[in-house]
Image (tube, rainbow, N blue to C red; front, side, top):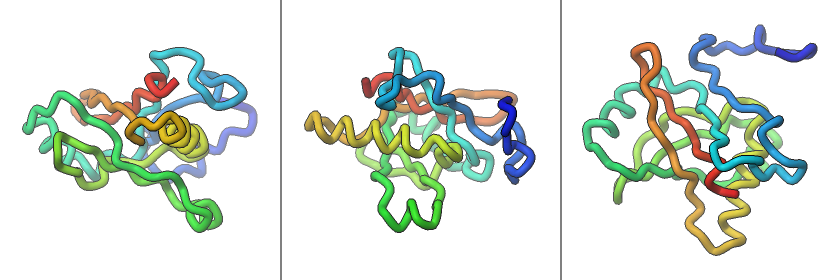
Length: 141
């Protein structure tokens, strides 16, 4: 918690606010290590969709999100995340935690500039009886 933390203003339950830190990135928003992750926020309402993905048993999950538009930036719209599971695109499974959108946007840009698929690898984790989504952002270095 920082001196100017706004966690009290966050309407999400404490266990569903997601996580990540700017301390895990260099000045150019490139992850400092390959193991850096961002846990998505607001995944509680999407547990049914996450359970479906687990049941399908798809080994490779990747994000299906696009870079933020000028309008999204202006209105401070949440960055919704869907997943590619094989050839299927899931419904929304969570949002990028508030304030960390520039990191994800920069990762997508970095992948695009390299000519790679604009998808961030994902891992599903079970925590306290709920499924959580971790973006393996360190793999976009």
